[in-house]
Length: 222
Image 1 (cartoon, helix red, strand yellow):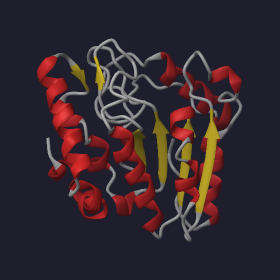
Image 2 (tube, helix red, strand yellow):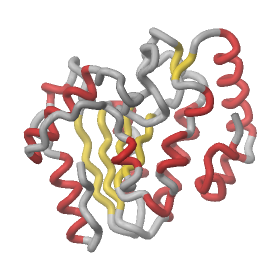
Image 3 (cartoon, one colour):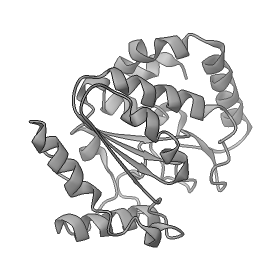
């Protein structure tokens, strides 16, 4: 795993990628994969970056860390591999989408179609040990994703941020820090433990589309 897997993001993130912190992070991640079962598969850790290059980003959905069950995580926040049963957080996400836009729950929990429309599905931590949520929070991923969010400030296109959960909301100030059009919406994480504390009823999907339309962009086909 190296910076080359980041595709067109690499030049934007170069100052961090060339430093000691990124090298140390990659060493720790490789050691974790060597020592046990880690999700997502190594080759999919940076998949969100490949599917949604910087110039295509119109929405950033920021979560916590990957799903920790077998076959679920595939490199996109909240998404599961095609054919995999949607986990509870994703079920709640689809419930809010139905309440907001009237879109019925899908047969599949794969969010690749969102990524291909410019929805950057990023977690604050990009790997996890099997069966242990948030187990890789100490590896250094937050420094990397802090850099990613800060780098988005340089992009001129309108960008909406959906920051779900406490870890994601720590990046709110950086998400808003740009001279270009930005929308920053925060809400509790859609997990069953917190969805009823304000995620349900937050209507993020319609707010994002309204923002994009005001700024001359196509709405997302959620």
